[in-house]
Length: 115
Image 1 (cartoon, helix red, strand yellow):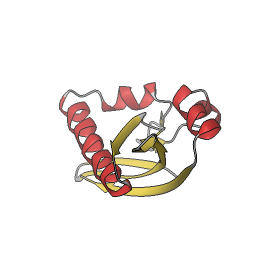
Image 2 (cartoon, helix red, strand yellow):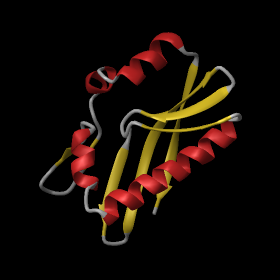
Image 3 (tube, one colour):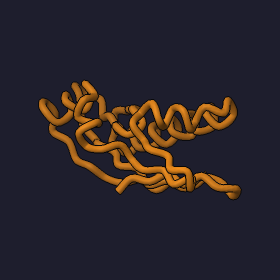
């Protein structure tokens, strides 16, 4: 289960990533945020994704657009502040997700994030 928790002490998240290879390049893709890291090795793609995610969070927090961007990606934010991930049916509408599931060999893993 994917989650993002934002509070006074920082951000904690658990996100699913799909690792697939296209030509000679590995891609670490997070459909819930539509972010991707890539490299010529799986480990390098994971590290690239971590940097992309950090840059994304830094930018959206600094510009006060994180909440709106999450909503734009199908996340739900309750009045209590709880953030719920997009539904699988919403994610399947994303063209990149269809391509990953339809044409690529992939594996899924989770990545914990604390900022």
